[in-house]
Image (cartoon, rainbow, N blue to C red; front, side):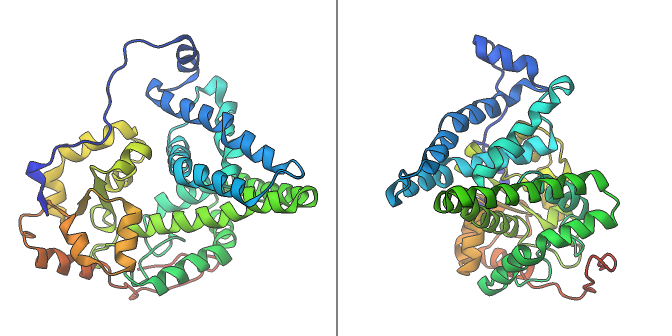
Amino acid sequence: MTDIKSITITDPVNKEKTSYNFIERFFIYLLIDKRDLTFIKLCGLILVTIIPFAVYLFIPGNLNWWLVLIYYAFNFGILTGSFILMLHLTSHRPLFKKEYSYLNNVIPWVIGPFFGETPESYFAHHLGMHHAEDNMPSDLSSTMKYQRDSFGDFMKYYFDFIVYGLYDLAVYLKMKNRAKIRKNFLVGEFSFWIIAVALMVFNFKATLFVFIIPVFMVRFLMMAGNWGQHAFIDRNNPKNNYTNSINCINVRYNHTCFNDGYHIVHHLKPAMHWLELPGEFMKNTDKYGTENAIVFQGIDFFQVWFFLMTKQYNTLADKMVIVNPNIITKEQAIALLKERTRKIDDYVVIKPQAKMQTV
């Protein structure tokens, strides 16, 4: 356990660059915020590696097990996390200026399917629903009704999302009169699966490995990440972003995934640039103490998920940052963590097509 007063932030923060090469200047002209040039570089890397590799696997006779393993190691082992968080951030803050807004379709429509992201589904789920509902019962990805240190409950959560998630999201968006988001979501989802079926006729195995399996893998990862982000909830104040989410600071994940660990800050200020999140957190540490928020150092959301699934509360307590002076011992920290992972089922569960769930 580390006291917040002794913390020095090592996560990425804004460092003004003074000189740019010709290619960088070209893209800066197109961008809304030149700090997002890093996304252009990531897109460039993907366009010259993952996509040509995937195309190569579709050529008859080229697909074999060791190539698939290399493809998955590079895709999921190195680039998937960065891509999904780029997709996340560019959903909140469009990348290109209005006059070049058509280029904003490249990430969700061209690159996304190679990372298991069906076009428009992430935007519809995350901005059209999740941020509007803040993990409350009407949030289709809410963790409230589950015992959040139970692998069995997590698998129920995952399978419920896989089986009912798309239908429930379409119903939710219709009920909320978010017609444009719903239309884009349905067009993107159906387009992906229609093209996937057509590609299966051409090359079944390549389509399976390049497009189909990644959808289920990525949705598992996203559900595990969301579970870690919203595993610790104060049952007396579940709407409070300070106590229904967590921050994970000073961890390598924040360098590869654009400060995604600052999830409390993100829910409080969804449009804030990712380089500003650490500073925003450090400016308001007193508030985190007052609200009895949970902050971890040196671990990310997926590690939080794993430690919960294996009930390693000692490890979680060791990684906690003391923001509340009343939580100073490991025993107190463990007690708080266990209390916050308890199932919250004292609310009415009503299917979204009937009416909104209420607490």
